[in-house]
Length: 570
Image (tube, rainbow, N blue to C red):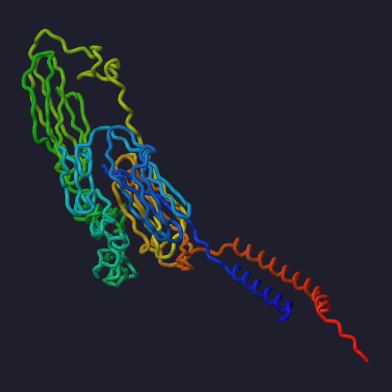
């Protein structure tokens, strides 16, 4: 084989290798997501997600006031999430807490919160303040810190379901279904008809759920008259207006034309037109009442009462003091169902007999009161001055009446009801789970309802209704798609008491599951293809130049290699 054939073969080989390089390749995306950072008693918890498309080694660390208190690492598959936590002993003061995470592919993310300790913890294991509540998801218990001990308020039902986000506790409970809590109720459904109806022509249909948690509308009743909002009605619509249970888990107002409005989800089922444990019994009582019957003028009189929430839900209760039918003072407290608190009032009265009345008023409407007579004898002394300038803020003094002794009270924070949804666009691998955070700020304690449309409900898991006290609360929308494509999700959050509605659009792309090389999925990179095309061009040009060059050199080499003929002898 001569050199020309060798160079031709070399050119072909190089071209083939370049062609292999130019073959469309899949490049993985690199990403890590940190979210859900929170402090629960003495536990710092957060979540780390591999938002890339390949298996990654994730390194993470908890930092308190920029000092590392816990570091670690673990492997996560694409879209996989892991909860991380660390026990930390908090004292008084303000703490800047940060969770950082970095993937082996150099992507990183972090989240920071500020945690304030204004008073010592009263309860331990976990740490908590007096009156603080705690959700024990392991044992499905709702607990409250009382007198230095964690007291179980409710197990599995009632207050646990009402106050705790039960979705994710490993049990399909608290009215959860596969559509509202896919994590707990997936593939564990009991075949049954649900208390949900609709109309299809003259047929009243009922929703059926099979063992695979799939739903199907089935004909249930052929109406002799008309079918309206899932009910058979005969001729004239004569429904009695009022609050009723639309089904086992929805409370709504039925209008005279039998239509429904103001539909609210009940965590603990709906009974007799009320959400059990939410709009149930309302009650407050003054269980103990103590007071001084006689006092000298210039000395403080006092009354002391023990207030109990006898209702079935958390209530705001105002304890008021009236003297001789005139309003004197009040204090506001929040009590959980069955909780008690002792309140006392000290005051000065002039000589004579005075009617003193203490009244407890719950926001739900329940009241209780006690009235006594206190006699004041003259002593010739005067009540203490409003300010004695001794540097101690004593009874009867305040910042308004005695700024020398009393410091200015901290302003009470005010909130404006708002909703923030993030992210509003995301990429999700098919059958993986994407997470959208819904941050709710409420100006007052009220119910918020969440509705999602434009995508299959079977892909979603989120609380359709929740109670938010004054302040902030975060919930999550979990999206587990089952078909590739591009989708737009319409999200609506409504503050029921204020009547405000907030809407947001979330766009997400669902990529098909593809495995390339070491288990990575990805997309075609134009950069790789362009680079390969350049390499092919260079190789081909070099091959042509070499071929031409050696074609010219070869004849000279062949002539030089011919041995001269020996002279013939004649």
